[in-house]
Length: 460
Image 1 (cartoon, rainbow, N blue to C red):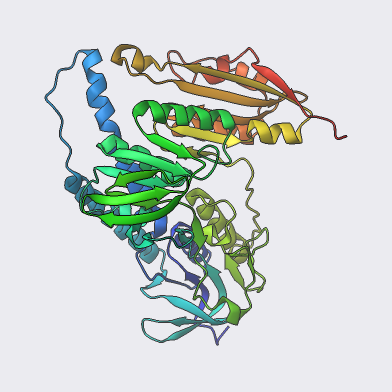
Image 2: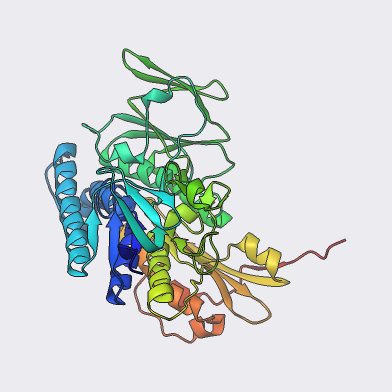
């Protein structure tokens, strides 16, 4: 290895890359990581973390309003966008410094530069023109917002990246998209006081989620005053004196002060020199095997750039498994089944496992348990909202195949439910647990009556 500068070169200092670099260094590898933007990646800098801070901010309006039902009297609250963004930026800067410090303590060399592959073992740093030879290369460049097809006025559209840095809170916001990001920002802007319209090309928001949970959230968002327009797309945007004139595919038009597209993300594979190194792509993402190895034996990839499950904890797990496999002498395959996830909407969603539709396609008989109820807090506040719980169970084995929750702290609940589902817990195991009363989560262990059973239709 005398002709190599490092044992591992990591391209991208996001969640997956940072974890891989630290663990590999802990195994004794000489590691260098290159980052062209900011250490921490999408999640820390302009993704999960700042978004959750904005979610917290957006929920205070409900808290102030609900307090009256509990005897509190307060003056009319006011909100200042500039203060929120400044405080958010300060926290993100602190986190970036912490990520940098953790890498330095792990003796990982950090290079602030774009890095591109010259061949399977050589990386060029564009900031200086220098080259680095590496025994192993890890690509962890993540993904970036994709605005979709070119339309008239596309230059007036922002993505979630720019939403974190708007100079002022828009009075009217139109968001195109129906996934996590679109739904979460619709609720954020609405909670902070904007008039929000959500436009989605599909039949219902949150494609891929259980149909009941999709319908429940759409209903709740509608009750809050968010206008959801399905089966439509934005066709054109024109800047006029009093805002942005947005025309939809059915020729209906809306006026907005801000138009945000959250129509998906594309793996960051452009301009990395992948073709020079011989790295193969599949459907626009880097193709990898179960150990995150690419078509080139010494080059690996983790996280969103591989387009497997695009969630921060998955990228972290993949990065850790890579380091243990290549440098720790312990081959680790990441299990991508039954990954819990949350949508920080209003109400919040927490889900794991199969939807009812997926379960019915895979199992002969599926038992469905579900309930909807008014949260206890809403009884005195008078807020018109409902929580929703649903369990999907294999009728033959009694194993819980999926859990879908809408309501306060659903994200916190699903992390714990995920342990049980991952351990193949049965409905009887859930039923054997004593309820914690009074809580919403006790519904998980007190759902005793089946709503219905779904039987798979025999092929003709």
